[in-house]
Length: 113
Image (cartoon, rainbow, N blue to C red; front, side, top):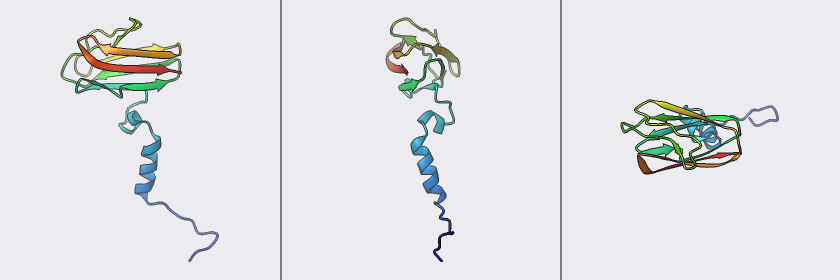
């Protein structure tokens, strides 16, 4: 029976799909939006955008040792082994590319607004 007081419900799968579309990938994985994982010799996600004052977290989930090294020497983690973390607080807006000093093919970027 259709009427003005009848509520319509969306199927749960539709609701979950809509939430996934508007939620950043890191949050879908259960990680804060300012967390970058190092997996399979890659930074995931490779680029993130954060507001000034954000402390970003890198976590090495790879069996290999990796670093988080700013292209301009603004920050440098040293070697991170499995499950070790590095943090850096970005206070000034700008674009900050970084790499792994041990594996120069690994590239990432932090965009600070």
